[in-house]
Image (cartoon, rainbow, N blue to C red; front, side, top):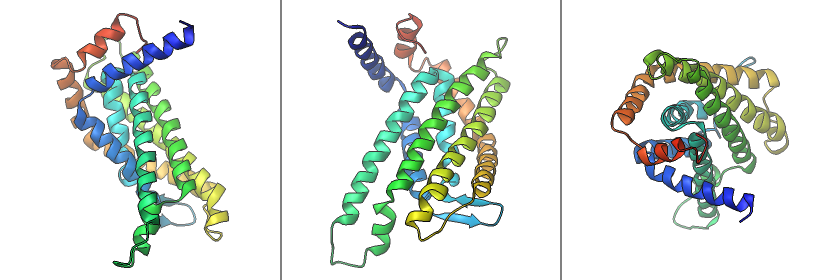
Length: 250
């Protein structure tokens, strides 16, 4: 067996163990929040000369909180795999929405429905690229910050610093990458000249990151309780034991 085949076989095995190990409610909330972000990002909630906000910021904090919880207990590689899974489910959902929007119906006027759920390909592209990029950065930054707390890595202070700093940086990059791709790159071409400036993209990213950080701070006690409960009850023991043997990097 070649090295690549051995690696892929090992990854398949450990990924199956991981999917069995992470509690379903967290994965469900994560996937739903990612799908919701994609839909809400189609609407600009506020646009001024120096600031712009799209609807995605209302729910994106939940995605990052779920990633932080998974990273804290299972490690960044596990959180990255769940992020990829969520992105793939989102793409499948968007495909189903698109097909539904194209099926003709004489029961009613579904123009508004079709416009929303039919989606826009470059919005989906922007949200997917931004989400995966920021997820990887968020997860590894969270993990590395946690490594600095050697005396009490499972304490409240360690969890707070991990989640607050990684969420802010991750959200800032997520918002900025998405805004630039969609509202600077494609919107002027496909939306009759509608666009954001780079300054609006940055202020949108910064404002959104601050707003989402506030939500993270508000709900972080729940995230900490989840992690503490998982640790107390040995949640994901099969996966953690497997990677502890050195067969797969955490």
